[in-house]
Length: 306
Image 1 (cartoon, rainbow, N blue to C red):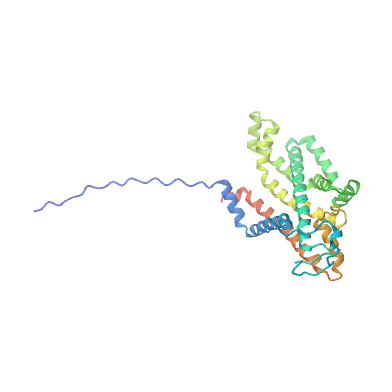
Image 2: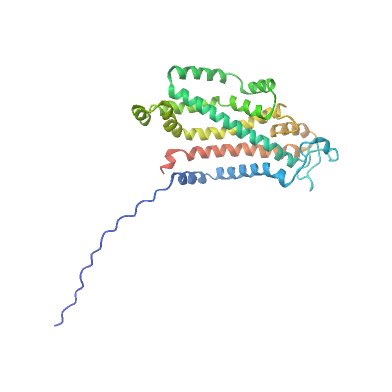
């Protein structure tokens, strides 16, 4: 009778579950932005137009400042191999003119929008966080500003002061923050009464520290969104002034001034002086708005928790 060989029982140790990988916050925000296809297309278009406006004059130089040099150029020339989008009523190359005017429109729009959001954020946070009589006085001043028709105010200020590039930036920047301040004030009113703000105050934190460490970071969603729309508004208002003949002084130009000159030639059938620029301009404004909507989703806490 042979003995049966028995193998010792092997003990299997329980395996510990792998720790969950924490996705960085910036990557989650980038994923939310990338999920918005319209925002990606808009961002690509805005980057392309910006690079075109600032690089095209160096890649394909054209005369855009000396009208005397255009006497040998056919005015109102239709698109051709030499002038891809034709020439305007002053003999300037239209494609180069779009890039030349875009430099000023985009630069002034971004700078004026930056001033708008900085002033509006500071004003709104101070009013909302301090509250009481401070908030009441600041809001009544803001209501008085909001009662003034904005475009008429711009026209009056531009008429009084010189129409320099710097003055246009300042005028649009310091008069376009009123609506932004009301939005940021609402955030400050809410956040100052939340638990973490009350806890910081009870631990002896000063008002400015609470604003900087708690109110500002938790208002960043609305600040970024409002900042994006402020840039679009600044470009629109600059173009409105240019269309009314109160834009940048020649030999510089902006898209609004070009649209005003092109509209005068449209009845003569010179469509190339307004339609290409109008398409570029409208798409820029739409793209900025789509990017603003996507950035609002990027900083939305409920989407980050998914």
